[in-house]
Image (tube, rainbow, N blue to C red):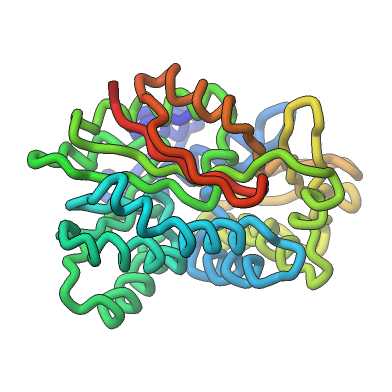
Amino acid sequence: MPTTPSEDRAVLTDHGLALDEGLPETWTALAADVLRGLTDEHKHLPPKWFYDARGSDLFDQICEQPEYYPTRAEAELLSAQGSAIAKAFPARELVELGSGSSTKTPLLLRPLMKEGTLERYVPVDVSASALGQAQRTLEAAFPGLLIERRVLDFTTQLHLLGHAPQGGRLVAFLGSTIGNLEPVEVQAFLAALRSQLGPGDAVLIGTDLVKDTATLEAAYNDAAGITAAFNKNVLRVVNRELDADFDEDAFAHESIWNPELERIETRLRALGPQQVRVRSLSLDVDFTEGEAIFTEISRKFRRETVAELYTAAGFELTDWFEGNGVYGLSIARPV
């Protein structure tokens, strides 16, 4: 479940850490997630911490691998249906959650600007460096567009977005990132998003669709090993930010399809017994051979399950765009 900054600070102070009030919330959130995740019986780390500047670059490389179809499928669908999306909801403001390097964003910005209504683009991400790079690129490509980047954790800080007083806000959540959330987290996320939207607003969500196992597993186990490096990047982030001593080479990347839960499950599995020191937390973490850190899920969807998610959170699915049964884009409005 997503946590609040005050809950994160409480976890750290209960652990005996004296926190400087000037510490950024992102550091506190990372520290709390690491403390919770690495002391749990079944170790885990949230996937949002993959995405520093290096992680965002690695993800862009993943998207170029022949096995990884979701980004191409979404880009093709945005290219084919961008004008239809812009006509279905001619936004005044485009908010993109988990925007990263904003590589697909122009596929939405161009048709929305062509409609003549778009005034502002608001990229939202936990990585300030990724946002900075994206802003420089987009300002060069769209010199007349106002860009207001926001360093936020969309899983806990959506309330900081505030309302769009004139309506016309379209919140985009692309890359099938919603598939990285557990069902209870999806409901919490959509409910929080619903509270920030008025009757004149909408959401646009990308969802990867259920398909054959071979295609799904290949997408997360590319031959070039880029996904493995991306998975291990969370260890580099913890090493850098929390003065830990993870050895990336001591862990193996693993991504496997779970047909019952209709999701890819990604882990880092210890290749041998070891102890990791997280100095900033005064924490020693022991691993047995074969023990795993659960790092990410990637749920796959069907149109009916997407509609059910919207309905449960107070939305109505109003527009559905699908590309050859591979990928879906949906627009939903508050009810």
